[in-house]
Length: 218
Image 1 (cartoon, rainbow, N blue to C red):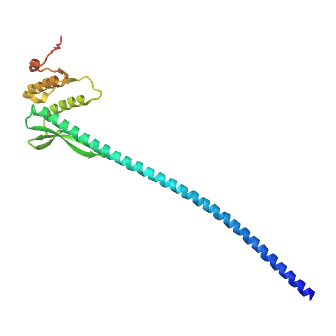
Image 2 (cartoon, rainbow, N blue to C red):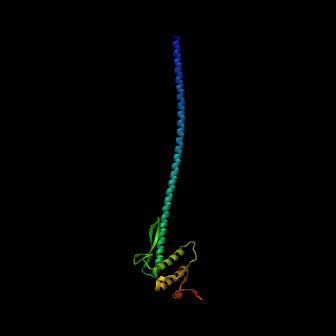
Image 3 (cartoon, one colour):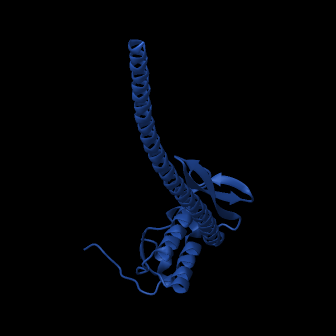
């Protein structure tokens, strides 16, 4: 009987030991899981913090992009307006120069897109008929346009330089209308303060000049 009781006690102690050992293992496993969960939670909190920082950075970059887009649009509009104003001014001034010689001529700049840039091609309107300056009009009109454009470019120079133009045998292609062109040059010189030096064999210009220097071969 005593042996039976002792065996039962040993089994009970063994069972308790087994259960206790299992409990310790479970407790240890639970602590490990708790630590792992805390580590994962810490990483998650760090990622959430980084996410917020990234979102703030993305919002800041988006604002900068939008501001740059608005600034670019303003610059483009200002550039377009400047181009249109300059185009209108040039057309008006060159047309006035042409009208002194050719009453029906007007000067226009036709815009074209080439190599992703706006380029202006010069044309002449003759009684509202458009002609290319390269092929559609005579050399006399080209001489007037060339002179007028030189005057305009000098006027727009910055910083402002001395208004001086050298002309070598100008307006040869105008024939009998050369005197009208000379009168136009004289008017430009007086009104805009240009000093114009002409090199020419044309004797008809004598009455339109202030100073004459004759060069003769010996």
